[in-house]
Image 1: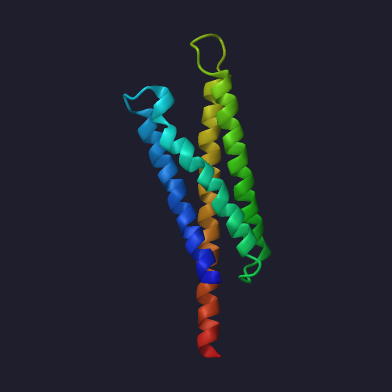
Image 2: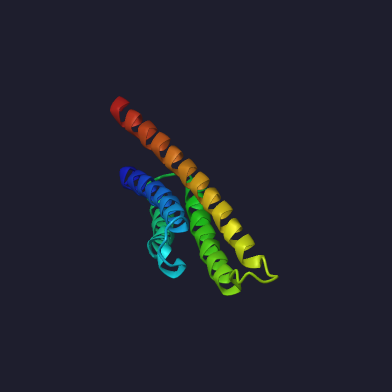
Length: 140
């Protein structure tokens, strides 16, 4: 069960890194803005499912509560991520006096970094825990 959790944690980190790639690709493309972030937007919803599944699998896998909590926190931050994007899109950047849209997209990027950092910590702890459990099994 720990191996499955560790695999999900690794997949989660890869998906988040892919999100950064897709966001950068969308920002520097000549495709119209509405279409340039479609792949990023679509994959973004998957980033919610993985940490929820991880939070459910962590306790039966015998992982520390901290890992369960961080997995749930990641799902919560992804929810904030979606809200930031939707509000920023609604406010827009019409060239007028409002700068709230671009500022919220900036927060969207910073929140994405927080999600990546927490996900990397989860992966590191899951890997360490899995290795320790494997060593304990071998010595028994």
